[in-house]
Length: 395
Image 1 (tube, rainbow, N blue to C red):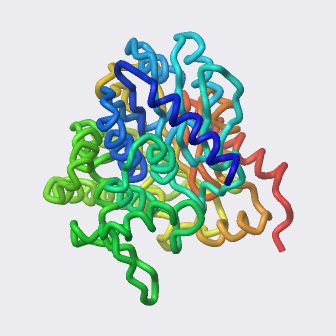
Image 2: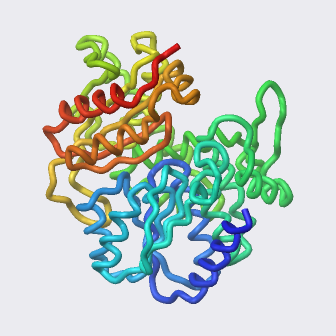
């Protein structure tokens, strides 16, 4: 903790001396939106201008668009740590300074242009100890007093199962002290956001709907600005949720008719353009929902594909034909991975994606990637080969 705290203080001092406009690059789920909200709260107090840039995945074509905005300084929040090497390359080419604040499985880099503040590099677990929004809060509280945004880190941490622990307890304690969060203990511990009169899990789900389903309708930027005003557009979220449910039912019916494709250690499907108009985060949410259905083999990796739209809101269009990949590990397989008997989804996804010319990142039980269109079957083949070569016998 001492080394991590020291680097946080050093980077915070640097940011205090920044000038001009800062590019805030963030993920479109609740954790990413909350991370951006916390950063905006701090930057407004310092007097720094900012430009919100919400992206769904890291890819060289997307990075090129981001770093062609003529900004000199960027914060990458809840995204980028697993592709720090790609960010390093583009940052050095463009002469920009990048601070990555993330909790996904990291890649170490050494560069005067990039600092990777992932707590996993300092001994913490990104799947248990810290969310992206908590990591952001810990940095920003070294810049300004941002205790009024501590509740956002609590909401952003809702994606982590169980009670908040380790680093995640820091913003929780701050939020409780100022009366923004109430801890309710029962069969399960719940964190209640007092001024919104709703539990953290409900708010987290709502934000992810706004950010992902509303990705192409300005949802992420509106959500971030609302967060800084301590409000959430639940009415808009309900409309988007109805759209999402309709599409999910359509997708479930499609899979029920066509059945999942079973190959080796993988069960997979391709929705093509069924989720067009929604952010590609939606395929991940769908895979998570699907992983609990009776048609799913609980011992096989679940892989879903959908076509990735070329338009990146606020940035422009990429030229590449791409496909979004989402990987989930059903319950039984997750137990095997936890016990070290099967490889984690993150490593499998990253390696398979890179081999076919794409990029990926994630955690042990949930990962995602972007790959060139037409490489889906190659991805599955490589994924299976890696599992076969790395797995340990199931007991």
